[in-house]
Image 1 (tube, rainbow, N blue to C red):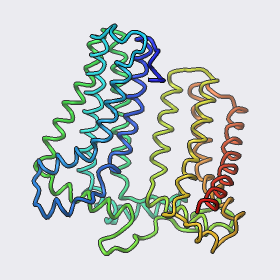
Image 2 (cartoon, rainbow, N blue to C red):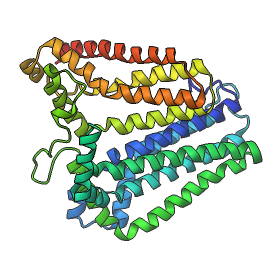
Image 3 (spheres, rainbow, N blue to C red):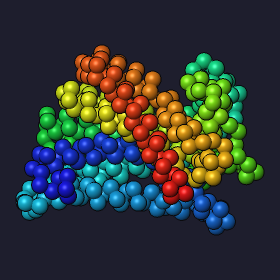
Image 4 (cartoon, rainbow, N blue to C red):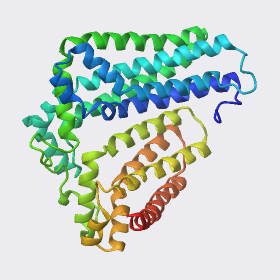
Length: 382
């Protein structure tokens, strides 16, 4: 209501497109975390649940995202403070469009991630996956879990599909009118229904296969033991030797629980799509600064006792060491950020070299400041 309550109808339409655009990235990323590992899978197995019961169960587990987003869409369309009864037909059409769009993409996402378990297990356990892990670690000095490849592919496909659908809808609106903007949303619903139809015959086996994979991927094997390390100390070539083992311990836990690379990849896509709209240098500099600051959300996530309890930190290192640990931990993203900004400026002409240097300095400085504040918070409240 604060965002769109006093906006004009045109501003409300633009806000809805922005929400659906960002919602596409959210659906692409968050769906597997809503569905798996499923704590109720044992009950489903004991009850010998069939495909329809499992499908309803999956929809219920994602209901908070679906219902919450429909509330946002309704607020954007009908939350008109000054003229609540004006343009009701247009508002209703856009509410239907937004609801169909979000529902279709979410259902399609549920189907894709539910079917990904078998492929993920293949990549994780096969010789082909092991060769890929070795190659990435040797040549790029960056660890990759081959089992994450299908999930990464799903993230890119779903995010790209939703963003393209929003862009095509806006193009159709500009060329043909309001009703034609519904076409991409309707196509998404049909795509989702076809995906459900294809999934149903093998839903049971896919549900349990995906549940088993994500349960292992997020930390534990069938035997209840921690899975093999995804990162080695020698791969942290940018970290000083005095804190390398500390950084390794935190990154190991983070990579098991939180796929930061996928989240930041989606962020880069959004920045590039924003740049494609030619918004101007000032807005792009602000966007890059906010995105640089967004990277450091990982520092806040690392404060959880799941990654490094306060007693464990005090036991193996000093306060100064742990401040530098969180700061150096963030340096693994700085080269990717720099390259993305450089190529973006070459292609779209935004952000001068001096501004890029300033953004990188801001990234490094904010990493240090937030690392210090995070450590102080950790020691005060732990």
